[in-house]
Image (cartoon, rainbow, N blue to C red; front, side, top):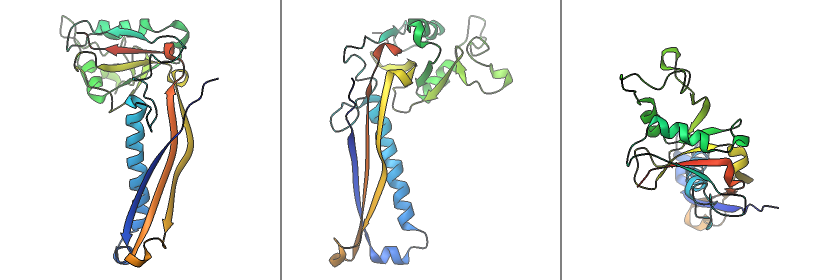
Length: 222
């Protein structure tokens, strides 16, 4: 059995009654939107690089933990560069059992770098072999596998030992425990003497690596 600890995101904001009364838009709804956005930013960072202390353990941090196997590592061939061979090597470094459901996770800048790769004749590699081809529309795959953008991963070319891309079956590699959706409580009493209304927001979520071998990371070489 694998236990995924849950962690709480918490925030409070005091708003004056005058602001609530005089604002021309729905300030209550705006606060809820801001809570959701900021909690989402914090979660995204934690899912990638969280240290597990009062937050989820990120997939790049917890990859070697546990007894579920070790994450395969494909290393970029030259410092501060990424080549077509690195992409191919990362795909084939992943165990075959996980390839069918595999996808890419990388920074948007890394996607741009891959799309700009050219061969010796200055022809883009981002054609049918690496996706749907730039001639037929915006490619949505790399080496036949879909990709998703993660702003919290280092961008290529990166620095030594940076993990600039992940490839794997993330549904099996990483587990997210979503215990409590955004809960916002409006407290009209606690700060009443000060003429304020207090808004308290909570969110409970956990995350950690479940099957490490289901994911391969592309690391910048020394």
